[in-house]
Amino acid sequence: MTTIALDAPAPSRHISPAKGLQHGLSLAWRGVLKIRKNPEQLVDVTLAPIIFLLMFTYLFGGALAGDTGTYLQGLVPGVLVMNILQASMTVGVSMNTDVSKGVFDRFRSMPIARSAPLVGAVLADIVRYLVCIVVLLVVATIMGDRLQTGPAELLLAVLLAVAFGLCFCWGSVWVGMLVKSPGAVQGLMFVFIMPLTFGSNVFVNTATMPGWLRAWADISPVSLMANVLRGLMNGGAIAGPLGGSLLWMAGAVAVFFPLAMISYRRRV
Image (cartoon, rainbow, N blue to C red):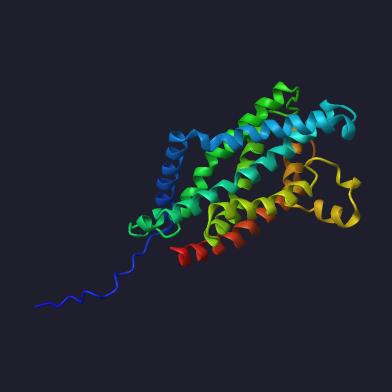
């Protein structure tokens, strides 16, 4: 007769990367369904682009660029990067909420890759980024901004903006797994994102900044990606800023993805 040890550990499951990605995509669809059932989650990515475009164009455009039309042309790509970065805060808040409610306890009991809940939540954010981009471009067009290049360049700009958000949102995921309350996630991410976006070339030329600030602003990931999008949407060279942007994006994933996974394992 075979004796079974009731307290023996469960055999470890080996899940291939391809299978893990499939699990992540399934949970991403869960996130998309949550957005569809609760469209209020899109309020920030629909109102923020409108507010920033209207406020900065008509309050500061004339003073900074001489006329609002010229200022708007350079502002749109920068605000796009800024809003994408701000939209990435929500994934950390959402995941922290799910952990607090015990949702991840159910995920842990399922035969899925350990990274699938995190990957799924990040991929579901693509919907939020696309909504943000569409709203911003529509409002900018109504305000008088016009694409100076072509559809192919615009599509590439959209893809790069989404990829930028997906890479940097791992920082939000890490914070969401690290702190205890959703409010703390939002507060910490706000403190990080605001100086990062305003200490860049989104709103003003870095030549007007003090030397120490300009040195940072010129190599900031926000400034570099804003320059890439300006080149793609308004015309101009993109090779230099694109290389720097890709390095920042790879670095963000290399640093924050492992940190998020470590904090996730400790939390759940």
